[in-house]
Length: 192
Image (cartoon, rainbow, N blue to C red; front, side):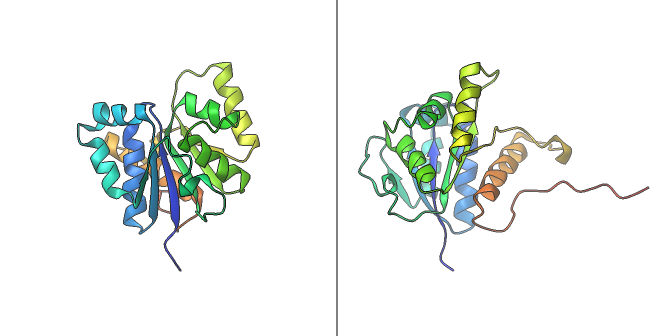
């Protein structure tokens, strides 16, 4: 079986470490990664992950696509990919996806996933949520996207932020269905 090809979009919302963790985990499983980042994502990566944040992300990718290159391979449904994760997904990116506004490569690639009935996992990042955010989440869900807010699995009792980030990233990858389960699962306590 060949390695899955996955599109990874990184938008400018806080939570840049989520995109980095998704990329690292996909690369470890041998996936081909098509990476597209917004301009704001590069800034957020630098501020939240250090000045080398984008370079570390880029190092995991098989292909890097410019945000304004709407002629890139991932802009076409004829190019087979296993699906797409947007981590983090800003509310601007969510709104564009929900409205079919394919105005850059990230939102176009997401639209392609939906029209081709492929998995699209959006790690939407904002709090609290406005009615517009909720309606956009509903619209994207109705079109087939999976909304996965980066909410910690507290029942796993994480000791470090990195554990929380890695668990959320693994859960997003699990939702693509490209490999066996990688996220930690709830374990029922032993009976008394």
